[in-house]
Image (cartoon, rainbow, N blue to C red):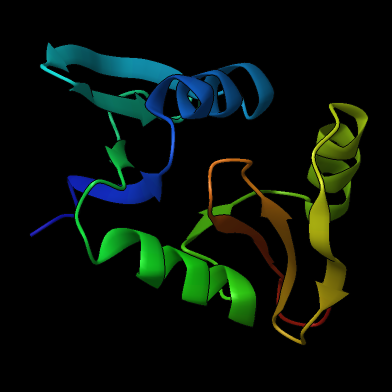
Length: 133
């Protein structure tokens, strides 16, 4: 069994599509119109056949309150792996991304958390090698 698809709930699919592709560097896998919304998935440029991320509209009545509560409590909706959190942090800050948690060494991992501009916090994580970086 493998993870094929996961989602992040967004308040504006087109805005999210621009952010996740132009700012983060993901590639569009699917963009299928479905009435008012679309089935939009993106994938990592480093693994285009890997897990898809669905940019899911927050139209369900439970979605917005849930998203708001997570944001208020500083809880990320998703976590993305990177090779170097500091370098990715610096790259994204250069593109205007707002971090709510700068890079932090948590022992076995280094993490940072940013606002995706679409209603969610996203964590980036670098796994440290045993014995240090």
